[in-house]
Image (cartoon, rainbow over all chains, first blue to last red; front, side, top):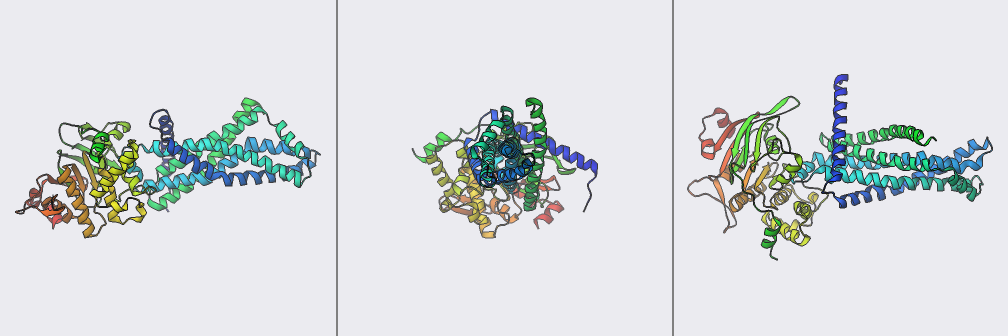
Length: 259
Length: 279
């Protein structure tokens, strides 16, 4: 295997970052001028949003269950088992809802977007689209970004709600807590800043998932092997970016809301 | 409303322009340090059919993509349908491409769309009413003798059928220029002849300017020495060993033009490389 020099690697990475930024910029710019392919946006919303419902519901629900079990064990040492609802709600709304949903949707859709666009790229369908006078960024990239950003926000809300419900089930059925006390403690612990944090994160995560998937799809080279490589890279890069951006956003939100 | 009337209403007026349909002046392009085209200059007049020949890897497909603005040259000037496209913005290029039909080497049909949606792609983009679009798709598919495949998907078609659908998609808006990238590549001789007959029909019935890449010399000479007989509905040899005056040749080798002229000039050339290539 030929080793790549650090200089070449750095140059390639910077060029890729530049290309990614240009693609994202062009997609955002095309949002403000016609034509906008609304039917494509709705199709993608159905595919990305509705299609991801089962995994998001299941992941959210069982994460809430596990969170309740684990936190109850720890809280018992301090005689604060009644605070289980508060801990589950805060964790799900601020952190686990958006991040877990982001990672789930990244695994399902960043790969789907990269492989779909990658296959189109290697079979010259994207060139054919350009030759037919259609801008692929408007037709393929923008609808995917818009659909993912919109739907990830709703999926994150749903995931958090399912997590709280899962926590409630465990708290009531296994830990013997009172359901109204659980929900009251959940509701009382959430403040405005927590909800804003939970709603802002999916916007960034959705943008990352779709734009990274589109970038790797649109720059695929090397036939079917290249499509496989692009798909893997899209999932890895978007997942890592989600976690890094989550850290930065959390720090920023703590700075703004102070908790 | 008849199909003809519908077409007149929905299709943009034919745009008149001065000069050749395509002209290249000192065009060069390289990829990762490898110069694929070197100072290429030629012109294709309006109504002319130009056959682009040459060994594989000589830069033919790159040249064709430059004509459609899918690639941009490193230097030189390209004019297409009266517009200089070298510095043209991509947004303006999309409008110009509505007047150019392109048939890709591997057809490049949208595999998630039916034949009808593939052929009607441009009509849907132009928001042509569904009923009218359907009529025009049928008309285009009739031209390529593939009306029965209207509801099929590309994966259900043979290689030859896909090329024919690709031709139907390229001609649906009656473009001023058609670019064919190896329309017979990888096909059997009988299917190749059918495809070349369609190209010939387009040349002789609509007189559309075309640039055709081919690796098969027999296809090139078949096109140069035959014409389409509308009454008979097929190709026939031009009498008295005649040749079609509007069909000319362009040959590329290692990124340079080695021949640009008529069929007679090509067959009478003394150039040793050309003689060997044609042998």
